[in-house]
Image (cartoon, rainbow, N blue to C red; front, side, top):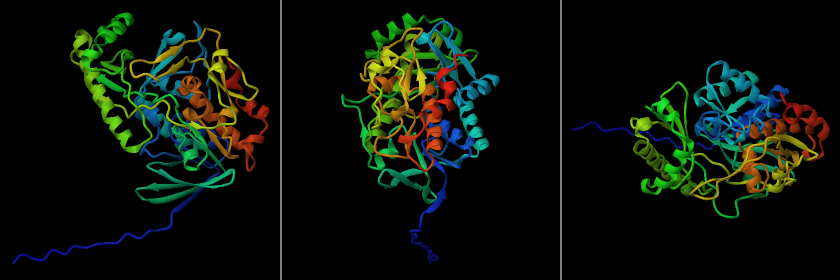
Length: 432
């Protein structure tokens, strides 16, 4: 007779959440949140950096974007317009041979980077600054009394966590903190704004790929996209100099806020990426005939939900290069609106153009101690499509940190703007 099998059962106890007390809590560990957290910690504030992913870096690392945009001015002699960690990243990754500079694209300078090297840089910088990382933590609730946020409630695989702070930065990309706190938020009114499923190919003949004229590539993509089942009819392929690798951004995927629809969109994005590979092999066999997918990025998201700020940055202000009295960041990147599945809309600006982001677009109109950074600041869709790229994201992260330090236990709506701008002078004035 077989021995009886003893089955042990355990009833999980519901325990009180652990508590973490800090001065400033940053939700979202993408490039904007990393910038905010490092700046706040270097200013002597105990800072927590919180993200639902198990690693730091957000889309800058996980989505394998691979290009820094909005770091430089327009024109034949571009100069940096964002400093802080942007300058440190360029210095350190450049010294390690992890950057490639491309001039003239979109009238400015963009920078290819190695996403693995950026990820390690972020991890080291966060540790050296003394930031408290909280990864794999999903926001489940916000404690708010009137106009002040008091705590974030988080779920992790190791139990619940409550983070208490005096000031908060919403760098979630989707205004998750503001939305969960039941503060007013905006969403696209005219239908979805598309993200991209990035992919990295290996086995590319780099020399042959670099000889493909941009006009030829664009024409082939427009003419043959439908035959290959591609949704998007524009995009780019960036071969990495000296390597058999190319970075591709040639898909458009919906980015719904519904959890089930978001999961389906991710699968659809991977399917689009596979079709892109088939297109590249068939249409440019001399360069991509032996290419294969090295890695798929996490779903790339451009715009989903953002705060209602004290000021909404308008498309007209961006086009006019308007400098606000409370400007905290600047940018000359084009309006880059992905509101059609077939193609993106680009509106480039002249060599002397510069537009600005006001503090009012970072400060939630209904809260005293909540600042947004990155792509969930307040703006009209066209304006946001310009200032959501990495350069301005780093700048708004730094501005949010400095603003909260100046506010202390008071209100972000009452800080000394001149004092804030003095702290951010490089990001507003420096030209070399």
